[in-house]
Image 1: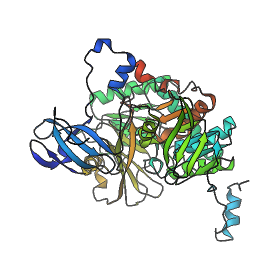
Image 2: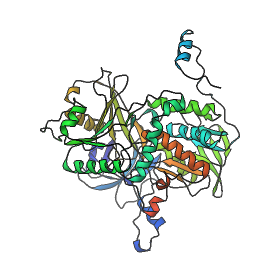
Image 3: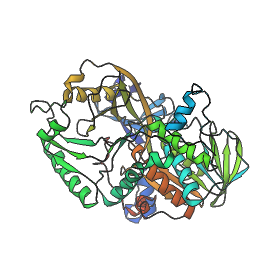
Image 4: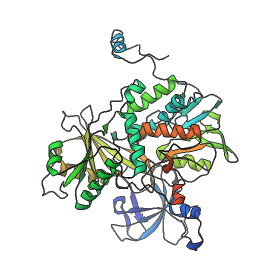
Length: 91
Length: 417
């Protein structure tokens, strides 16, 4: 249970949000040229990191906007929140 | 040689106030080299070691566990065992496990308290009814016992269920697998550990894997908190932490690790003598031999390794429980906890070789791994010993995410994810 600071609405309970999983997975520019291995990598394979992870979240029971978040999955501490299209503030 | 557990050994030890029972397994330091090492001392890992020693005569092997055996998801699940899965591949896999469960206490000389009290899956809407009837037919074609019950038959089988048509999600019927049931989860880990130890398997606790040493595409050994251990074969049965181990080896898995919660009530007299599951409203319940109601909640939708989970998930499950079982409205809950489950995109497990020679993964069991423990161990042992999958786990390879030949079991997996 934790509080998320939505970049549009401010601090809200986590239950208002839904997770969109790992962030910065780039959609293939030329889907027709992708091999099966590359498709599997894009569609299914995930880093699933124990530690600091970059994620997409949606304020689904609020403004319904998507944004990015840097969160430590080993203790649920949020290090940064940033808008879609922005560069991550932490490396 | 270990003493056999029996009524006579129980009486004999009673005379010395049960102070002289033999240790069930040793606490060895790791050797320099093993023929194979299993990473993860839960039910699946210990069962794998047991069958590697018993069926494939691999005795120079070890199980490394970062905490204590059975301290992860083996001790955190709701102990439900069933095999009523939809597809042929899953039916083969889970019923293989169920058949081993039926003789497991004798095989291990350890009472795993396997109780075939039946598992009932409820339908709450028209689509549920269609899906569950279809699954009943599929099960019967695969030789798995399954029957469809109408609302009156559900009420007769489990009288405390509220079958009133006026509740938010009325009970429209359900399926029943009578061979299904529960077992004592700790005993499964302890029984396999004792059996494996007797055949010479080293069970090394408090030994965390820190790295996998490779020579090109071959495994050479494990870096652990107890030093480097040489081996050519590594079988990973690390559940929620599978991706952590995979990242060490530089391979990627299609997994996401999420918290799954469960809770138990204060102990009460026997009131529910079966297991009842409801996917649509997400409530499942049984009663342990101690008398506690064992209730399974859902997964959170974000990746986390915290073994906690959120309050709203528990609240949602308890709301459904109270609507279906109004008699429990004054019950007090004693404990709540979370486990980290490794979820595959198709809700089916992976028991597979990898692109690295000598590295095998048994993972992706998600929310329902306990039921498969003996079968999973047996098939994973076969895969490691022969460097080839058994015909029953051939479909559960890692390559299915490339070929697209998925085993979609979202309907039969009890926890929606």
